Image (tube, rainbow, N blue to C red; front, side, top):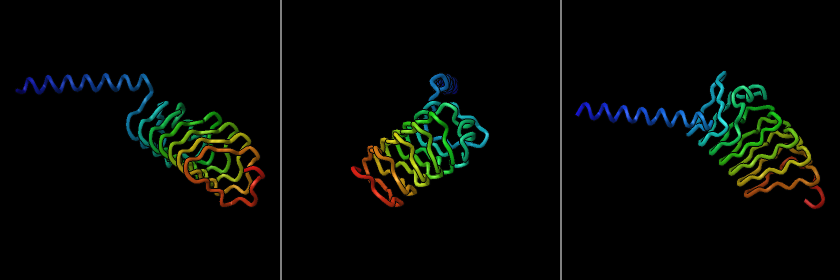
Length: 167
């Protein structure tokens, strides 16, 4: 009986090592990830949620997530004050970027849940994200002509002083 258990444990250990090697090769992290200061998470995809509340600057983000493109769950970057150019994630759940005051041109994430950009004071031309839930832009006082996001829920624009013609 002990020999059978030892054999099963050995096969399970080998299978887990093969799966870990394959995930590393594909740069996919399966499950939720709690980011830690100073730790590099080189994954292009995280199947669960990402909690990265310590990430504050663009450099912090680039050090922690140099290749991140896709998150299956929630992406918490609420403390982030700037995002790098070219960062256009696909997020299955919500994306919290409420600490941003500006976004780079070309930033158009695809978000299945809510997108919180409540700290933005302006948006660049061409900003038209796809959001399955609510889009929070409560800090904006004006919006660009041509602003036409795809929003499945509510669009929060509480700070607007005027609505452009045709919006």
